[in-house]
Image (cartoon, rainbow, N blue to C red; front, side, top):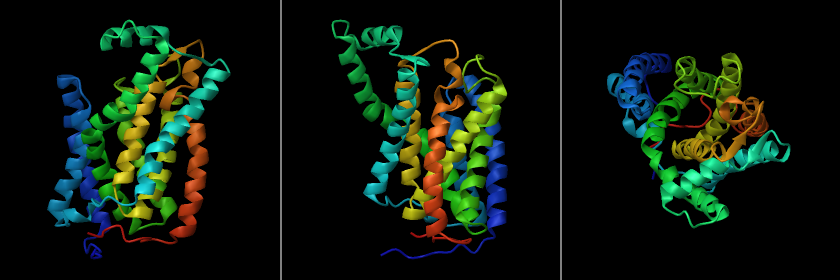
Amino acid sequence: MSVSIRASQSPVRVITVFLVLTAILYAAGVWLIFRLGSATPLMLSVGLAAIVTCLVVRKDLRTLGWHWGSWRIQWQSYLLPLCYSALAYGFIWVFGIGGWYEVDFVSALKEDYNLTAWSDTAVILLRFLLTATVSFLLLLPSVLGEEIGWRGLLVPELSRLMSFAGVSLVSGLLWAIWHWPLIFMGLYGASDATPIFYQLACFTLCIMCMSVVITYFRFKTGSLWPAVVLHMSHNVFLQKFFGPMTSEYAGSAWFLGEFGIAVPAILMVLALYYGSLGCREFRGPKGPNLESV
């Protein structure tokens, strides 16, 4: 049986300590990108900041939402990114904004998989299955690292200060801002085919809309795992399947991925839906108890 725990520490103090530690560890994470060529340490740094914050303010680590939660919502979290990615890229392919499929990418896959005798269709199906399973699971350490911080610690603390809508937007904006330096430094983002501020606007809209959906699932289940699953699913389907499988034409970059408008536009509809549910179900500050163990 779970025991409800409401932390006695000031949420402002907890959030301040977390954000300061996140900023300090961010610098180390960026340095490691240049040293190791991997963003995993940077993503893990958010979770490390959350854990150190708990130790500093004497907050029980068990309150970060470790229980699994609802299987139904876990499946929603997995399938939603697949659906909105397929819808966005289906629009792109049907209207000739980008092409299905990138022949050079599929040819490279045949070589990588040592399956040169296979048809393009068979290799594409194999790629999809590997993306949906193996690649998905390989993202777990890095994405869990981020989500321990954003949804494990930050969202419950913000929920003690503001409404569901406020928590969704503030946590989403902080999540987006965390990525901005990487975009400005050219470490994360699209090509130079679109202005940097357009990419920034599309990405921020994408992240903030995702935040509304993820926050709803966090409030609904009290678990951080739906956030982890949705974040992993979003990254893997966009970055490992739909993005590289699409042939880019002149003007495609204005619509593709997190830095074009197609995916954020669909996510905005989802954010309005889940946001309206959240505002009805979780009224006022301190909505649900997100700190049960």
